Length: 309
Image (cartoon, rainbow, N blue to C red):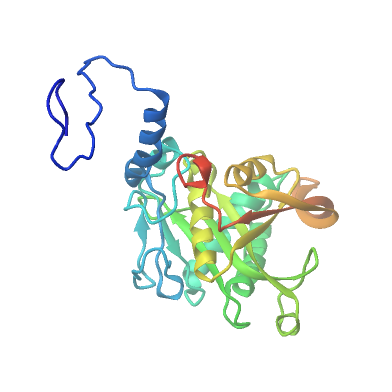
């Protein structure tokens, strides 16, 4: 209701309303701008929300709808409780589809393992090119590892996600599992440890994006979806382990809100190193950085989930 100068107050008012003369070019004050920003940002976030995967086994409590496990969600679907980290990244990743890999689907699991070897081991982890034979062997070992991590034989929650381009090609992957910890040490995932009193904590792993898809927000979307999965399990935190030399990954995780909690300076990890005319895998000493994110906190301005992290 706009009151013209000199007009009586509305009948429901207990006092006269302040009069604001019409000024076409009036500059909004700082408080008004802040209020508009706080309450309007979620509205504008609808068109740029991260893609979401819904599955009966871990349907988000924020959105009480579940789709068949073969269903996927495309980037740009309505907001579901997670704010985007930036309009540019979301726009660039339109057309990217996030899909859950069923461990029982041998063909998809095999193709995911092969993708991870090419995008991670043959890129960041390599100083030389592995021969096709060695790549195939490494892909076989990765397949066994993924089946163990994301299988259901031990009764521990887990999920393996892939990002696909518009033509159906895998351009990224990420996994999340409940890891077994003894203090700061991640223990082997076997029946003996699963039956013990080890700490059970959600762990993000196997994050990789193909070189041609980098810079499009694919890794961020995969990580956000993994966080949604973990929250649906009832977990309130996520852990990850990353090598200190992997600076792009460290930068991504910090932007997502992960904070360093400890370092293991005596860890061992495999690396692709030159071996004559070809290359070979060699165990080397590395520093592993453990990072943690509190999933109960909302990102953005004043913890209201507004704006980029």
